[in-house]
Image 1 (cartoon, rainbow, N blue to C red):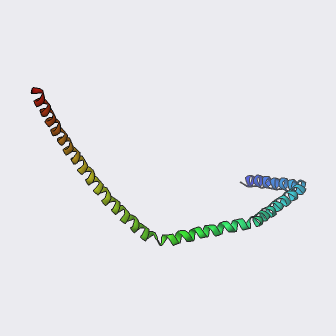
Image 2 (cartoon, rainbow, N blue to C red):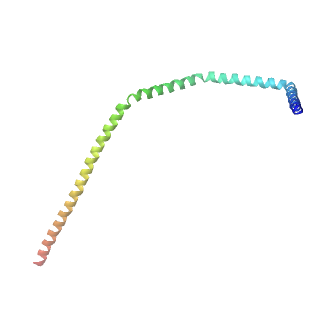
Image 3 (cartoon, rainbow, N blue to C red):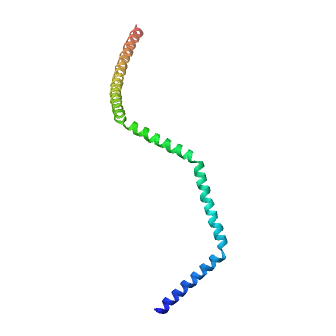
Length: 132
């Protein structure tokens, strides 16, 4: 058990030494990289500052839209009742239209009967004249 622990510890020490050596060799590149990241962060902040007015205008527009939605939500009940009354009115008009349609179909049926009677009368008149 002790040997196993010693081997693990030795491996840990060797890895630490390799990392330390790597850091010493690449110290200049690591510093340059850290400067690069700092410059990149500063550039991002500069971009944000340049676009701050646009972002602020966007936030104002969103807040206005939310306020308008809130204000219109107060009118929802009245709009709903208006819509319901319009639907009821349309249903009544539709029923009336259906009744008129059925009445028209009835009248066409009666008209067809009248046409049949006229044809019969016409035929009988022409038959009488033909017999004379």
